Structure formats: structure tokens, C-alpha cells
Image (cartoon, rainbow, N blue to C red; front, top):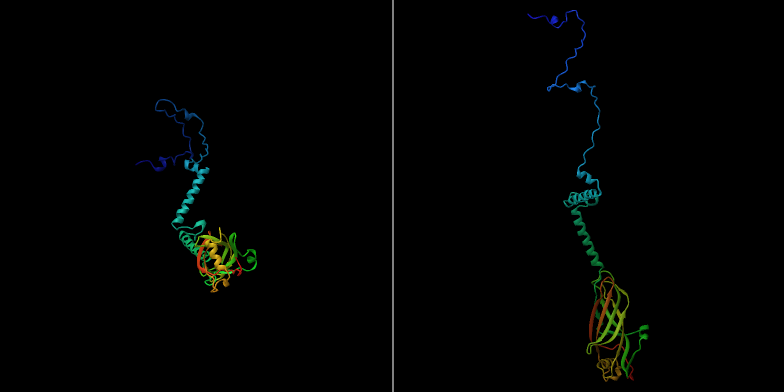
Length: 288
């Protein structure tokens, strides 16, 4: 049998139970026959070295430049635009200003604008003459400002008159305003101009048939008293007593009107021709 546990490890022997120094061993010999000099140096001291900073990538460095930040903002705008275009978000940081809302908003705005324009844009009115007396005698200051005369030598005539015109404003929703109306009077048989006129600013009610009187200045100079234009108007304006029947012949004329209507970008023209109108003046019996 082997030794007892106590005698094997010297537990029962008379020795001090203390640690004993291990004798220094012989230095290890390197494989190449040389002694390792590092083993004879002082103990190595470990020093804490600060860690190096992060390595910046080229893309990260570009983001710190002005052009890089501008590209990032452009990318953010493009991303927001795509999100809005897909209906995922609204404009200007809102949730309700989506693409669908914008379509309905534009449609509603166009509808409202069309209604406003339909109400406010004036319509060119229809004009019609008084069938019985398209020309009436002038009164007031206008009558006094123009002499009434017919002369044979030299052959000419001049007189004032009013064109009695009815205006149809039934197609207008709001009152119709004329800035002015310029008039020209022509004798269609000879295609000669025999008068001019001017009507100042006036506002007419809508949905009615108001009557306006445009001042006309009839003035014509003929080469002689046999001129067809002078002769036709002289016969029409002679005193009825000079005719055996007491009835004067009518005279034809064409009235050309240029209307400047408030609210319209351009002027509008209208013309009408009267076949046999009575002369608005009456010459004395002893006239030329």
C-alpha cells in the first residue's frame, strides 16, 4: 500500500506550515543559442493611450460644406415633393393641403372666378332708333352752340340735333357704364360724312330699356347747290308750307357709333341705317 495522505504531503511531519521561496531557475536559452536580453530589463509599465478620433468619410466631409448642405436641402425638398405627390403629406407643413385638396381648391376657385366674371363683365348692348322720330330737335346749350343755316353761296348747311336711341341692357346683370360714345353721320346715297357727335360718360341701369340722346352736329360743305347731298337735306328740312301737300320728303342717313364701355378692354362699334327720317329742323318759308 502507498503512504498515508498525511505523510505523503508532510502534514504530519515536524515542519513549519509556511510558504517557502522557490529557488531562482536557470534562464531559458533561446532556440538560436542567444540569451533574451528583455528578461533582464526592468518591469514593463503599461501606459493608457488616448483613442484616435473617428475616420470621416468623403460623403460626411462633403455634408459639412455649403454645397453639401444645399444638396441635402434639395434632397429633403424632393422627398417632401414626392410624398406630397403621392398624397402622403400636405404642403407648407400641413396635413390637409394635399394634392387632392389642391385640385378641389383650384376647381372651386375657377368656378367662383367664372361666376364673378359672368356677373361683372359688361355686355355690349343692342341699340335701336325711335321709329317715328330718330332725330329730334336740339335744346338747351347745345342748340345755342351750333348755328342752324342752309346756304347756297357757298353751298353748305349746319344744324344741331339729337339721335334718339333706345339701349337694351337686359343682358347685363350690373349697371352699364359708357365712358363715351363717338358718333359719325353718313349720307349713304353719296357716301359722304355729314355730321359728328359725342356722348359723355353715363351709367345706365341693367335689365331695362333706357333711352339716350346723342348730340349730333350736322355740318356739310358742298361744291355748289346742285350737290346731291346738299340738295337732299335741303329738301328734307324745308318748310312744309313750300310743298303743296304739306309733307316734306324724308332723308336717309347712317349712324356709326363707337362705344367705350367701362370694363371692356376694347371699344365696340354699332351702326344702323335709317331709310326715311324726317328732318329735325324746319327752315323758314323765305329760306334760300
